[in-house]
Amino acid sequence: MLPSQEEQLIRAVANRDDEAFAKLFKKYYPIVRKFRQQYYIEGYDFEDLDQEAGIVLYRSACWFNPARKVSFGSFYSLNLRNRLFDLIRSNNAQKRLPSEPLTSIEANERLYEATVADYTASSPETAAIIDEELRKLYSKCSPLEKRAFHLMMNDQEFSKLDAEIRRAIINAFERCRRKFDDEIN
Image (cartoon, rainbow, N blue to C red; front, side, top):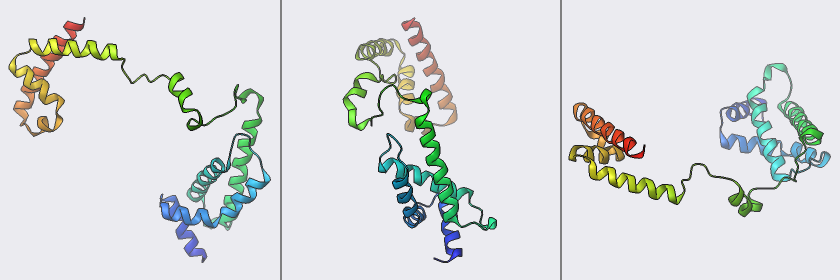
């Protein structure tokens, strides 16, 4: 590959071109393989190291300056070596040692399902209470408020209305919301 073609490829990688990234990564993969044989990082397998190498390749492409008269291979190799040293250093630091060995979420899916709380999910109890309150509210609303409630829940229909009718619908919906707040409190 000619140096100008390589520069274009590096620029394309810096501009987030996936195809160019794949070509450049394949070209410089022997460097990754060499470092993988030289250095061991506990808790990292081949895929993890390849991922780190890919991140370093992208960053190197973004930072690369051909005016400095350094080949991209040397620049990438130095950056990758420094990143691996950072990983080894942080992995060996006593205060950063994990209390348990690192495991993949996919390897222990059931454990994470049982122990990690999903704060975005509502409980069935809460959903039933809200459903009941919404039904009560709906029965207390005027026909215009019911229509407003329906339109506000269906954004496509609401956006088709002209500005004056939209204002009336928003006001009616606000009355619904206040009734709901009064009912809950």
